[in-house]
Length: 409
Image (cartoon, rainbow, N blue to C red; front, side):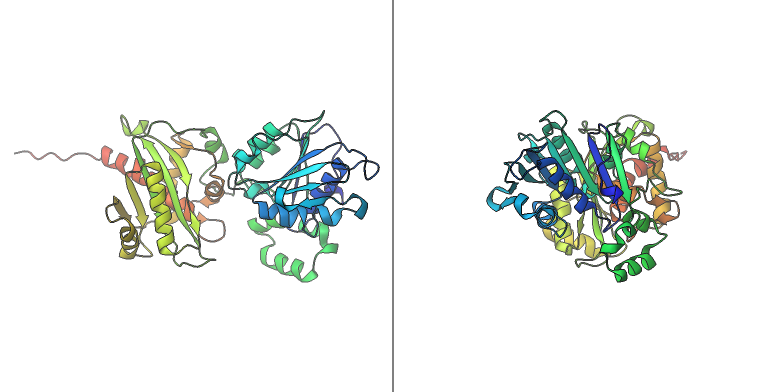
């Protein structure tokens, strides 16, 4: 199909954005074949050293290599590469090699070099910025090293930066473009459930949704404040938004680490979001340990947790593990949108910066409006972020500005 055909021109990166089942994997596999294969089975192709990069090694193997539309399924017998499991690589009859890498380990891309790369589902990588950057340094062989990115679009900084690059070309297609190879019942079900929704525009139409109407945060405010390393900080807080229940499909436990510089008057205070340590489907003990691990990792001075759902049990679970941790329980009395508004204002003022690697938190941020969260489920990460920034720079500033009452004796 047209969206599966490499565009003409002297491009460096080809991004294939499509809905679920639109044929992205088949397009990536066929492109790799077109790069490594020559006219005959033993003839050299345009590329001899290829990187196959996915979120995990297992996903690369099961989708990109052995999947129904993967490289092995697309290869005719006389050109079929050999899978060398112990070395995690494919070797073609003509000597070309495709090595498997996990985006969870960006440093594994230090050292090797390639003349081609296939990157799958980049938008959902947790360490997308680091892995992508390391791959660019490694893509340095041959006269014209190239890469293809197959992904369902998500509003994450790394994908938006790639799309904005002059050397990038894009093709895109909705799920229905591949209807001949999809179950009719699947198409009917997902269309009836998700058509017309933001999730549907992203997952079915393959469209990049750049924020929502009435969003409190703008992408530009976060991009302008992105930094590579945190400065010296006055305080560091770990904020926790516990889930209502604890099972695999339950809401995420939002755990966000934020530091602040609180020298001088409140209008000079600044904050840096250091880590999103959120966990999903964890037991109370597991998320409490994750929060305390983040506390120790960053040398924090206070742990803040919302207790609306769990009451005293939230603090009790944490203190069973660390009885002496400085702890503050907070109660949500206003709506999520109302609590988020003053925090978003600090971003607009340029007073909050982000370290890299916070894409999952940022996805939720861009879906927050004054009326509430426009995404699916609960904005647990954003709730934790709001509590952290309220504790560090909003509540103290309000107390600082509050008029002092003098008693005349």
